Length: 316
Image (cartoon, rainbow, N blue to C red; front, side, top):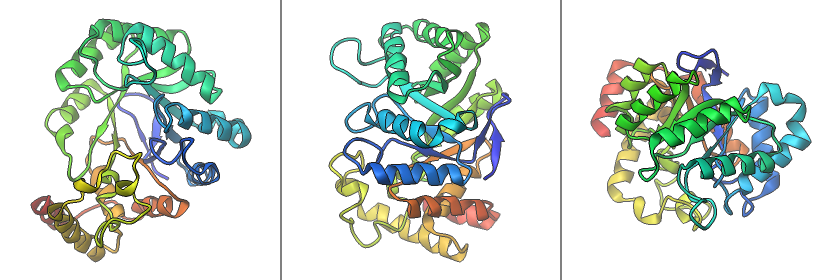
């Protein structure tokens, strides 16, 4: 495994991180989840990414991770970077959603209890909350660090203007933002418009999620929608109607380039994300050990020729 320093900090993150958004909840196979987490750790993946609402049901991914941590990885706590988040709806009522001080403080306390941890290595504001003053949200995050409930602060899915203001508030209180997390893949390139430049200027790392567009950037859908795929899963965010003919045609062209490189399409899509100088780590979501191994294969070939990048750019 290769590791990179996150922004201007002394913390290194593995190039590949494991996300527990899907396949680690109560509705999923616990034994399979355990195998994936342990296999990830055995292969140098030290960063495990959670959120309070991951499941389903919400909270169950944290609970399951806590069980695996307690039974198998407790002795390796200081080898792990464990992150969680709060900001999306977690429980009913006015305090289970958003980024108020009340919501964030209650959320991190619940998350620590579910995982059995004393602290998170990284705690994120999961989204920008337009109804809560940004000063209130940032002060809550600052206090979370000063109370020892998290070592570092991260932001996720913030508009660039609000992210810049948040970075300034955090830096003034000597709790600089460690990392910014957002969706980034061949089909979703929005962070290139503003966030990468801002993060470089502010010394903030970038962690990409959904690098495979929830499976679209693999060969999984070239011949239809498999029964066990995310598009066929009623609990997932990827819907059958998202798998359009136009998308599949692009995927087929990309797959041909990947074959010439001696890679799977998944490996090439991950390599493309990691090729951007602003990316610190890529979060992968897997449903099996075999799929995880496929993703880890990217480390064997993550560079591109100018011609390859040009051809990929034309397709996407």
